[in-house]
Image: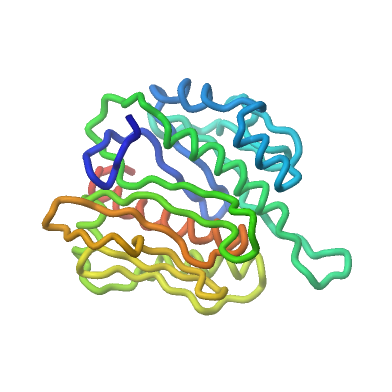
Length: 268
């Protein structure tokens, strides 16, 4: 059975992490589910072949120890493993390059990273195994390439009721650290920074936005459940046209969840 984090308490089996200083983006996965996660994906998996064909990506490697993902954007197992029961895998945040004319930005490196994460997160979504831990899964994350110019790189996921309550505890609030982190990344990549938002509300909802045509992230439109019903919600993106927008918003969610996890799961 697929884990429905916004409706039930799910044991913590993975999380995403972000190392700001190193521009390192990765996943921390519980040892118990690792065989299942990486066993679900091979170079011949339909999702891998689809992404290779539509995005013209190179070779896909499926060894979690030596490299997992598409060439030039594969995740590797980190030497340092700060958590006893979890294994960390990471890749460098992509740095888009100037085109030959020196004017346009080539976002292909970001596209490769997005595709690698899409495959990994799709596999994590399908995990059936559950670790024996008292910590709970606060959020899930998913990415996609939609094959269109408008909203071509959507992202979505689930927030648990515990995470929603944590957001609500601040009332109508701006998460300055989340906003500053998204702004810093965008400025590093594109040399400009404006039009950002990272807010929470007293009903447990959140709203993030980055530069673009209303490129934003928040609860799905049909999610009208009240916290009093004991449920979280599903979230999704709007008008996320490029992979950098997608990844920056993802880092925003990761930053938010990390803060919440310290309070809820008492994790370092």
